[in-house]
Length: 542
Image: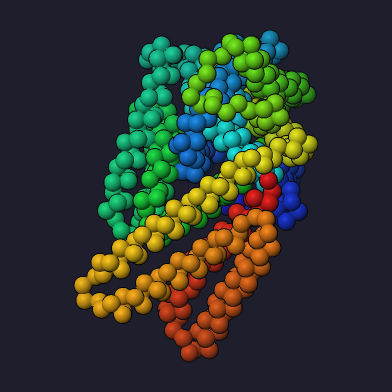
């Protein structure tokens, strides 16, 4: 039944997401809200998934896809703030919640409260990054939030494993600090080794569909292999994604196009399902609390109190760091070359939404400890985790667009630098092409006479110039309107060509196989035109 229900939830989430995007609403907020309401439908069965399935099926592809698109150089450039948020802010949140929750709730021991702290500590920057890109957040803020999301899950899940072991009574093989170091180093090594193997195999395939499928399997293999070695599966996946993303330029054009479309679709489906799944748990969280004889209103009061602490720790920690830097108590790291302003820091501090890791980790708490007694406060932890996850998403997620608009964070210098870099890249590309054609003219291939070679080079030059003119049409300023008209006419022409080919096929004058082959080349041109439109929209939002 769960399998059918999962598919129905995904289909419904797709429909809701489409409607939310048309209304310019945030799909995560809409999905959680509608899911929470739908959970009270009489007779609706509980959608309950194994937490290992959520962490092992949902988390790896989401992390891997984000790492694929994240530059290693950008990660290194912002290493300082990423590590502060991804490690130290997570630890500060976990211990602050632990001490507060153990004082607040009599059902929680200090160890169980630390489990709760580890569960609610990691942030999920999916919705924050999506909103930030649409509203023109500076690239450095987007980079820091994305990098944090790639690091903080490993920190929180490692702390979660140590805390659960302490409460249950199982022994951690080494000192907790050494165990954490082992998880980090082991996860990175597993990711590097598997990524190197996959890269080596793919270079010898020459088959785009097989290359794409092999890339799809890599995050799951890295996560499971690291888990078998008791290393960090999250870091294994992220490391593999970094390396494969850095080497993506070595893949063929068709492979890159296929992978880009594949990961966009996978991301969308998994994110939609996760947010809908979060909302659908509301009724059943209440039922679990009531069935265990706990006062529902007390437990939800605890949840809202912890929510306030979680939302307060992050801004306080970031403010403390800014104060320490101001008075010179912070040692500069390689990733601290660009200091965030107070407005950017405010946005980062408010981007503390929780997501799939919080829900899955809460569901993965053992039922009993080593003695056979129930795990102390398990239902309380799960209820509080649900309140924190949904509460941060609805409160911080709903107010994030307003905050960004009020602070007006658009950076004209960043836009100027990006435009200069684009022009520089086009100059490099054009000059390299011209040098190659000049070399071909001086040393033509054997068997080609000079007149034929001149005609070939002339056609290649015309093709290169046409592509360059298409790219320059998207430049801002006086050419902006011309760029819009260019893309509108080009896409209309491509649609006319496509429709004519389809009509000829339907009329029986053109073979279906031939039509499909020709349409593939038109698809590449249309994809290029769509990419120019997307980039222009992003620039216009800044």
